[in-house]
Image (cartoon, helix red, strand yellow):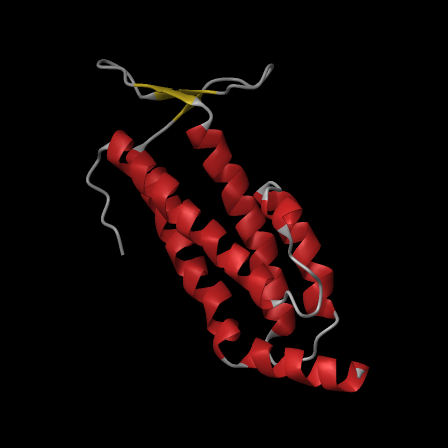
Length: 153
């Protein structure tokens, strides 16, 4: 677990890094599911929100313990990526005599205060979900794919 050191720039770096690792894990999940539904080059270029939307019905076609939890975890991951985008695509301004500010890159979104604690919290949550998405890919999903393909044959 990352400890908050009060540095918003360092926290932002951890958010970018750990969310990229989480995105990689979702790509790996889709690659694993390739025998059920092809995960071609075109789909690999999709935004992460579209990949998450795409993978949920594929998982729904399989039967394995923890499937519904994994689908719920993917929904949470989508929210984490939305938070990531808010920080990574926003503009942070350090203020010496008042709180640091996050300015959105989108129109009509008001400025908000930003602090290192929320960045470190998000980075740690991304790290936690890397394991949550990976865990069922070790045994449960490969067995479910094998069963699915044998029943389909």
